[in-house]
Length: 403
Image 1 (cartoon, rainbow, N blue to C red):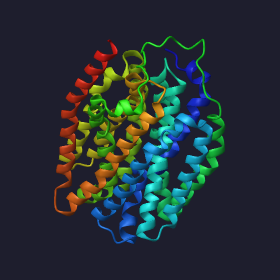
Image 2 (tube, one colour):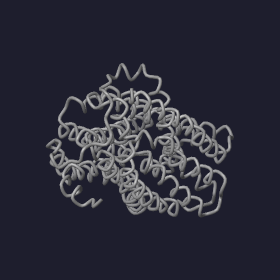
Image 3 (spheres, helix red, strand yellow):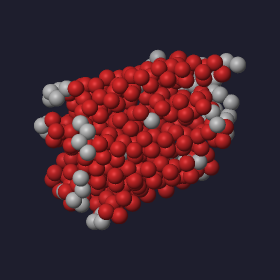
């Protein structure tokens, strides 16, 4: 199918979503962790100490998301985007200005809440509402903003930090976000409504569950076992990338360059997964989402050769391309659209909670002498095992939808 008419007819909303996910990189671990070495040195922190600070800030953001997330159901997207973008820019500037550990905790909290949390949540929820028959395709396009952020933002940040200092790099990130805000706000100012030219949906959304009903549904908690795995594992591996590079004797610049491969593979599989979701449904693909990530962890944990980061990034890109699009698309299939913002805020909160627990837990294990590569291998084994649980979830959801 020719994608050009779809892209042309929906350029406004797709571009708005892409810019939101692109600038969410400001609060993502891939960017924040690039300052880990400087932060540990200037604040005299161990791996465990920095991991604890990151865990506290991220955990606090996870607890805040269920309260802020439902705003997507009540406020115009444009108004919410302006608020979230300004707060994220403030957080980036605060990272540059921070001189005290307490202030650092607050800064991490704001970065995680408005970057990883609310900016991504707003982009995904709005896109899922704006598109029905082509929801998978639309989300796959919007998610490309993450890939672009991983490829462009991280490498520009490294170059800026090397040339002008890591604190000035954070000032540039804040300024870039504020400069882009008028364009983003204008793109999302008008909601997309269904058109006569839209294809007939092949996938029927579930009835509209309330958030209370979702919290009483056992399937939701089983699904969370899979949904929480990528943010936990990817956050851990990226957060401790400086330590891993030192451990393996690799170059940080070379490791950072592997993000380009991650972005390229991620982009390809994001587009492919969007097509597959629209054809087969998201819930049918659920059991396959974590398999490449499991293999990626086994490679990174067992292999010390210089090619290992590139193999890890390629496999992670495959898994991210599928899981990110999938975990953005399946909730209407399981719980409907009416309370999507409130329900997705629970999902995003769980993901942020997983990313909060990862650095602190693994940092503590590193400090007490637990081999870090062995920890990565254990994460890979978890992914492979939990895929069988996702198979059970998929069958249960399809069974009750058919009733």
